[in-house]
Image (cartoon, rainbow, N blue to C red; front, side):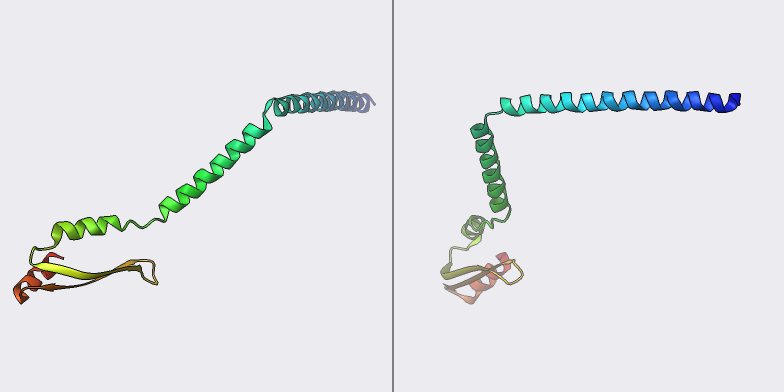
Length: 122
């Protein structure tokens, strides 16, 4: 009988503790909810929307720059490595099916030796 009474007292104490803890948590949740409402009210909505819009523009610009293929490097290379006897008449630059660049040049030289030397350079 004493054992049963002891179990009852422990159960009642545990129930009381859990009930108090539940009330503590509910009060804490309500207090934090009010704090969040105050923080939201302190934000200026137009400024936040402007920052969000600017962030989206930056993301789009990063994506565009990451996918950009620079053609200007090819022209500098041709300028530096074209021999004086070689003259290019036509240049065709495109992206192939695999996404890799393709460059087709046509031109004229004074001799076959100049053509062979230019082919070795390129």
